Image (cartoon, rainbow, N blue to C red; front, side, top):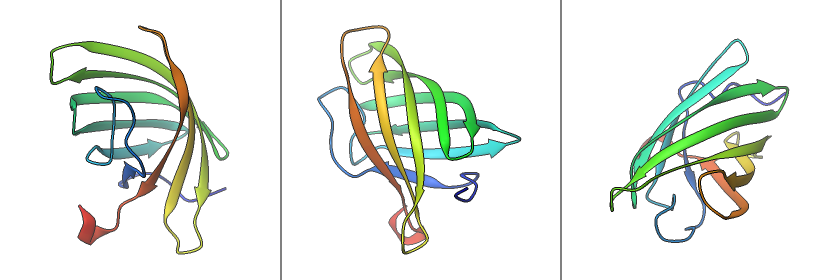
Length: 116
């Protein structure tokens, strides 16, 4: 199993559609006893939260976010936790909106201290 996400900051490697997370979004992860949660913001996202569980190297969580235009949206995501050769963590995500139409995949990677 890849190492704990607790205290890690991750960011998407590519921009998604407008009003969604992008390369300027930062996720601050927490993990304890199989529970995961994170706060995120940046780019079009004013404030976001996710909460869920971790079993082995699989995360299963729901997310909710507020964008700059004042809209809220929520969805479900399942992510594979991968440890990169340089020791950083990558999440390979499959997500689906629950409050609107849309689904897709994305990749977020751990940000090193000097990239915060």
